[in-house]
Length: 117
Length: 106
Image 1 (cartoon, rainbow over the protein chains, first blue to last red):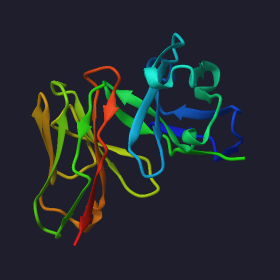
Image 2 (cartoon, rainbow over the protein chains, first blue to last red):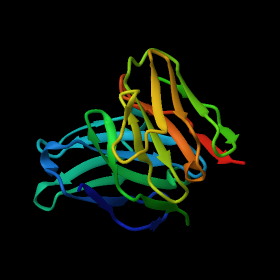
Image 3 (cartoon, each protein chain N blue to C red):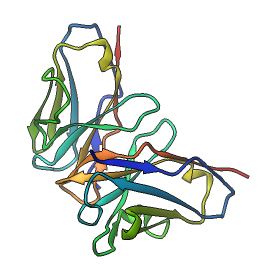
Image 4 (cartoon, rainbow over the protein chains, first blue to last red):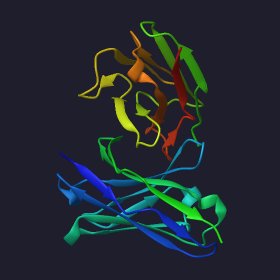
C-alpha cells in the first residue's frame, strides 16, 4: 500500500525559507510523479508542480515559479519542497500527492506552514 | 488557466439524491477527477477520468460528463458523506481545482 509521510508543522518568519519533506513507501519511488499542492485556510486547492524522481525533472505552475523548488532523494525515497521568501500569503497546508495516470491517487497527510513574526 | 466552477454548498437529507456540478471555462475532455475531503484530512480520490469510481468507495457515488460540464452524483446520500467535494482537471496546463462544494446533511 502506497503511503506518503510528510514532515511536521512549521512556524517560520517572514522572508525566510522552509523545506518540507514527503517520504514515500509501498511503490517504486523513481517511476511515479510526485506533486505538491497548496491549500490556504478556507480556500481551495492549488497545484504547485511535480517532480519525476527518476530523472529529477520538475515542472512548476507558473504562479509558483521562483517560490517553490522541488527536489527528490532516490536513496531515501523522499521528495522535498523548499519555499523561499516567505510571506503571510504562504501560510497554508501543503500536500504531496502521487499520481496514477493524471489523478492524485495518493496523498500525504499535509504539512501546515505558518509564516509569522 | 482553466477555471472550474462549483456551487459552494449544498444541504440535503439522508436518503436523497444529490448532484454536484463542476463547469470548466474551456474544454477538458474527460480529464476531470473528483475528491472527497473531510475536516482535518487530506483529500481522497473518489472519481477519476470523469466517470471511474475509485476502489473502496461505494457504488452510491458516480460521475459523468465531458467537455465543460461534469457531475458528481451521490444516490442515496448517507450521513458519512458530509464533506467537501473538489473537482480537478488534468487536461490543460496548469492543472486546476474547483473551489469545492461543501455537502451538509439536514
